[in-house]
Amino acid sequence: MTVTIYTHPRFHQHDTGPGHPESPARLTAVMEALAAPRFVLLPRREAVHALRSQIARVHTRALIDTVLDPYAPEWRPLDPDTWMSPHSAEAALLAAGAVVGAVDAALDDPRERAFCAVRPPGHHATPDAAMGFCLFNNVAVGAAHALARGLDRVAIVDFDVHHGNGTQDIFWSDPRVMYASSHQDALYPGTGLRDETGAGNIANAPLVAGSGSAAFRAAWEIRLLPALDAFEPQLVLVSAGFDAHRLDPLADLNLDAEDYAWLTARLVALAERHAEGRIVSSLEGGYSLQALRESSAVHVAALAGI
Image (cartoon, rainbow, N blue to C red):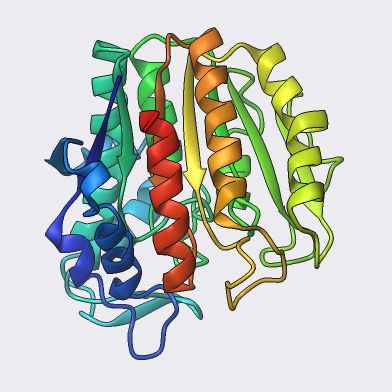
């Protein structure tokens, strides 16, 4: 097995404005961590643009036109938290394209795992709205691409501290895609209750503020991993947000980097049982630079088995 790191210089040029937590420094921290000697043999690949037709599988024409509008002001808010600057549209195309490329590689050769070091993140983007720092839903675009290539069952696993309302909305009525999420209860965007089950393909495990490793691991061991095993996915996609870490300034869970290593190892085992080892991860949130360095490093190490 190998883990390819998908990224692109344009991700650093997506400028969200002074003081915004979703800043280029986040990706710098991740890439610094992945420059450590133990990762030197992991291949790196530049992302390519997703096609408009690939994005249109999960987003409306109106949203795509809004994000890609060449005549719009260079600086503009799509919601109070979600800003676009001169290079944002290209970054959004490349972020979705990174996941599409990684999915193609995994389907062509199950030994090809991937970590997509991208921004903007994606899991809050709904079919018709950019929100929560997200323009296009990168992992959802990747899942829809896998279905278009002939898969019958794709799992999306989301351990970001904020619930991936966009991903849930996109696949709410599609039993071919299972969405499993742990997240802080009653935090932005306010979705992700246990009784939100879609077509039986949605499994949410909200955690009360202040929860730590024990509650997080129990949620996965007791509720989410068994549901994923029963689904028997042919591909595992990961929305890898690291903001449930105890150092994160935007939330109130108390995980450590080792919790991400623990869960990643179990997701790899799940992929090996059901999906020939096919697993693709994409960066979502995480706003403490120290936590991002530590967590992304152990996550990629667990993906690579090093």
